[in-house]
Image (cartoon, rainbow, N blue to C red; front, side, top):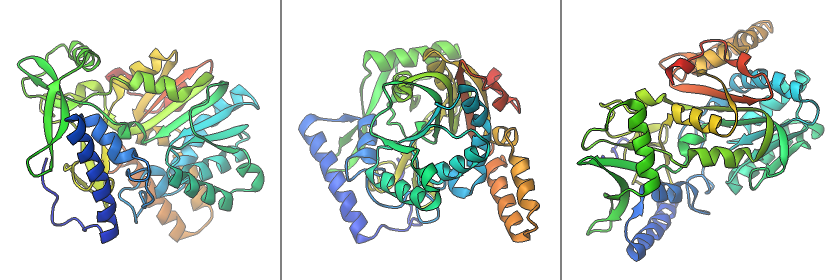
Length: 396
């Protein structure tokens, strides 16, 4: 892992003290029990109660945070997603629900609910599964302020996925990339799991141990798919728990659709021979770097998504693959041009320019257009039409 660049703006004293508390907790755990799997380190850095990146109170999204997600750029992304899922909600009838996993700032829910109301596809319940108490309160405040009381009253925050049977749509944007991921390494043909230990000065350092049966089998599954073994020294990420996670978050979903948007690759590209140190990285103040040990709790840690693994997980949960395409194709196929035309018809040149710039960031290959991809699943509902523009399922 490289050292943090001097170009990065340093945290203030309070932030450093916050990070030091989490680092001390991690050091104590390692000192007491020995090295920990990297996935455990990532889980604590992101989700430790009151100290983890997503569970503490600092800004995460937008210009004041560390990164900008598609819904934070403006209303276009959420409006197009609403366009895509509205037919599914109408097919399922008045009791259909929408479940958003990880609500961010609440920006997506605000726009999506307004568009769904206009499209006569208002869900009976809009549930947000949000593990961060701080983000939950921010979402609640924003949505209460910007939605009518009748619309706001249909929103519910969940502590766990719904276990009762339900029909509707599950939506997750930039969620899977933040799941604590195991890391593996290959040595002399054997699979090892990457861990985190302490050096003689108490710094976090990489270590390895023989992989357990679950991780080893998952690595062999990928090798079988690729029709080649990983080279000696190859290192990357793999989520053997992804099928269990998908089935857990969907809860009792019976009929409807699931839509995931994230950055990543199909498996053949994810595990290219030259990508021999994986995709793990960190975000801090809109800067991307690879020192994931720096400042625990103050930076996002993320890994790209293996969309082939996601396809396996979704179909393994009993759903059909509805489609897979780039974010650009998905938005263009679900009303992006219409949304821009609506703005142009207002005759406000400044507003039109603002929306045009937002559309460019969402769709250009050099921005988010190809790096982010959308994957949908359906059961007893028609969701394939949302992926007619540029379907890439053949790449999986």
